[in-house]
Image (cartoon, rainbow over all chains, first blue to last red; front, top):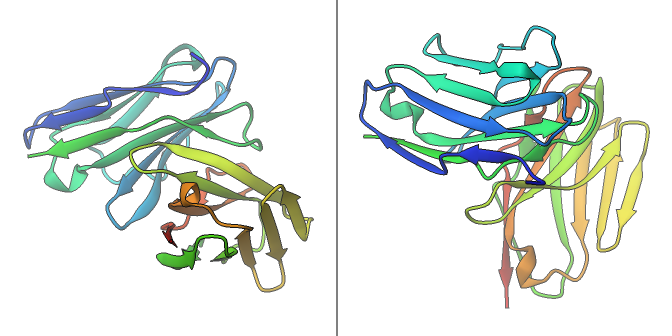
Length: 113
Length: 110
């Protein structure tokens, strides 16, 4: 596909369970970002991958959150022992390089019940 | 620290101009962006401006940047119902990820 693809589009999980969210960036884009959009909170930066460099994890809210990017392409955001406050839309974006515009996926709406 | 502020709501009449304002705190911002988010959709880049520019125009969109006041605005001329969305201002500082405001809901009145 031509754009950033995220899956699943919706995920409902029980409190305490682990979830994995997937992001397929645009082919050739070296930079990949994860953001969280909570109701009324705007967009919160979570983590940033740039090529083979160590990721910038400064936005991850707790050690229950982790992300990896395999082969410089697909990324997975994992949330362990989910809590209700983790409910949000998780957005992934990619860009050709760190200075260029970021293209966003449609997001994964996570609901923790 | 980084902080981007926007008004939460803006209501305009169809056909009028909309002006969405944004302030930021980091004077070393390199790029400033406007994104549009329609209901149930991801973010779409509308336009961006380099920090060494004062103005950028693209069809109905005009971006104004006042670096002294750290103020960014997006003007949409001849606002249409299809412009109804949430508009996010964002800044990039160096190699960091984007920092977004909370978004401005643009409401179009007939």
